[in-house]
Length: 426
Image (cartoon, rainbow, N blue to C red; front, side):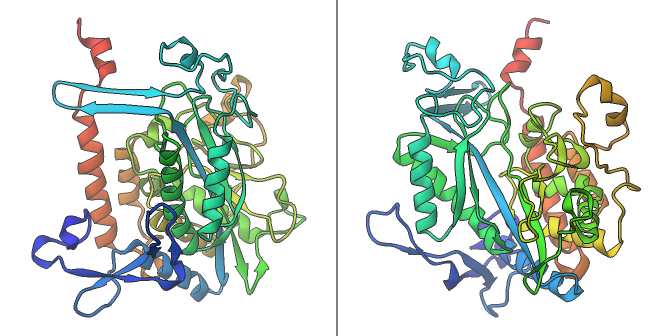
């Protein structure tokens, strides 16, 4: 019954079917009895034709379009799983009662609570990056998560504690093809949440669950190959990037304001995308600069590993739609032969948030600062998405309408506890 799924069909024409993709099969480790699980394609119930709003179908069409252009035969992707693991979370939202409450044994504040563990090993704010035990209390959970991911067919590069001192962690997976890596995001999030639950904890991919703590993104590493030949490497180019790679980057940055409507589709996303906390709000690229929207990892020095990292997205996105849109933006940059420097996208190898570089920062465009603004940019910049009939007006319009009415307006219309703190006594 597709009418029960937001963004799909209406009540009067709601029948569709799920067709298992046998290549995605895995033994689900979280059920009491042996269970073989699959990801599925969505099809019309009568004709069995692919449903045009199915995100997996859209990702498949995007990859086929890439091959049809002759630019490359495939794209390869590597999402970073950043998230928080909390010991307890409570929240409630009624017309007369609204709150959330979080407990993290790792956090500095835990030392001051009666229910805290009080063993003296709390992390200081923003000091969690690559913390080691006993300060990192989540190593074993991450290790088990990685083992389960690999048992389910997801190769992993590494895991570590992140900057956030209240349980922020990261797992990075081995790069692979679209749409398989979009499937990996779906399955990976499921595994992460279930392993945390097994340990009596809870995992969240909210971009900004805590005020004054680092936000959580989902950076996407990406590069192109043609018949297994890497296309992004040129030892004479800036950061080792080829001209194709630089035009791809220019396409991403040119369309970034519109992309955020798909890559950052929650109101909470824009509580992360503020200057500071290494937030990638400035639309430029750089070699290793973590304040840039696009970073070229310094350690990726070989042709096969040379890639770019697009940093604005977060895990509230639909990965199949977001990755397809990013690919289309990059293709558009290549087809238009966009020049990064002429477009004003850098490179800038300085800290743009340092006061002495404020004149540079003022000249650089920024990510939209709110969901409604991002949706406006998306509405105004759709031609690149419709190349190859990957997206169409129906899909884009339905997405914008749903996100505006069900996300943006629902949050805008509700008072928050902080507004009471500011305004109640006026």
